[in-house]
Image (cartoon, rainbow over all chains, first blue to last red; front, side, top):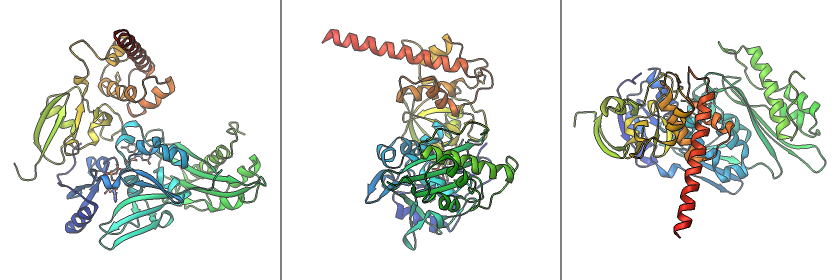
Length: 293
Length: 172
Ligand SMILES: Cc1cc2nc3c(=O)[nH]c(=O)nc-3n(C[C@H](O)[C@H](O)[C@H](O)COP(=O)(O)OP(=O)(O)OC[C@H]3O[C@@H](n4cnc5c(N)ncnc54)[C@H](O)[C@@H]3O)c2cc1C
Ligand code: FES
Ligand code: FES
């Protein structure tokens, strides 16, 4: 299918993109990898009057570690994130999640910034952003602002991105040394998006008990959420199978779990527990639980 | 230039093209309707089937989900650009030898995806091949012979590389 006609302009800097957005007064959309926007436009579910192409802005690309955070430029593609040595070394859970997005062609075009700004309730990266206490670095007419991931995702396709704002980069907190992590996803068999996806980061201290736990869930509710109830059960406990199972039983507590035509609310609640247990076991170096166990 | 149109210049299968296009023109439509390269197919409206896969600057992309204006300045390879005067590309030979197609509708996209894979990973495992083919749908083959075709191509390309290395070592 063919999108509705629109005007096209290429931005040469982030500042220019912000200006162009403001001039268009809400009728324009930014175009990055196009892999969320163009499918919607082809189905005529979205029909912006103008696209402002930011995909050639090199200032929005790249990966670096600054202090205790890893920065990823908004235009960095899923493929680049999944294979970048710094990401693989410092934040393997981010690489793992990026490698599970869509398929190779999608990962060659789709960008981290587009994924987070689009905020599909079944996107993979929001779970990792929450578990790694990401900050979203935004430039808008009001100046530069930083949003915590937990304040950014407001609803399906709704974020706190200010009007005429451009997401420049996202930075992730490096977990304590020795922490292990896992992203565990139950993909929708047709679309590949997460029916439920769980990111878990766990560190076990010298005394053999969990000292650090971050768990976040995507797909299950209409916004991704931090599963604090799971984290609370884990802290101070040894990472043993029955502890992990008990903790995972709380995976749906912090979200407004929703059913849809594909998966009922009860099924999603069940998947929250199963995928969380799987993520925790892998993060703690245990083999997957036997099927049906 | 007509109002609202944008000029795009790109290289397709080694030839330079310039066209004036509507911004909404998809790369696949530029290739098929304006350049007559109908080897690239359109199999869906939802960016899922991969029949439209081409290489853009060396990377496999779904040309139904890229605007022609986004490919401006880029280098595109379609299935028509794979064969050389010496003959078919090893991946094409693999599909021939291993019967990697039935109706053939998905084949150009699958071949371009496989070419993209073998560029990055010349010796993929079977699992890596299957993962790499996640973005292409085939309604006929059940994928078994597609995987065999890619394995065949990988081994032929590896052998050719070895022959080249030996020949280079001998001339030194
Ligand atoms: C077949 C298919 C399968 C997919 N499977 C998955 C999957 O399994 N998991 C998953 O998470 N995703 C999946 N995706 C979505 C994919 O990850 C998208 O690439 C991503 O969600 C959007 O990134 P983009 O760069 O393509 O953004 P675009 O489509 O260019 O933009 C998306 C939206 O974000 C806005 N935007 C983009 N960049 C910025 C920025 N820097 N600042 C402010 N706003 C911005 C745009 O204006 C637009 O509204 C899939 C997509 C396809 C086509
Ligand atoms: S035509 Fe189906 S993915 Fe492009
Ligand atoms: S050979 Fe018929 S769709 Fe693949």
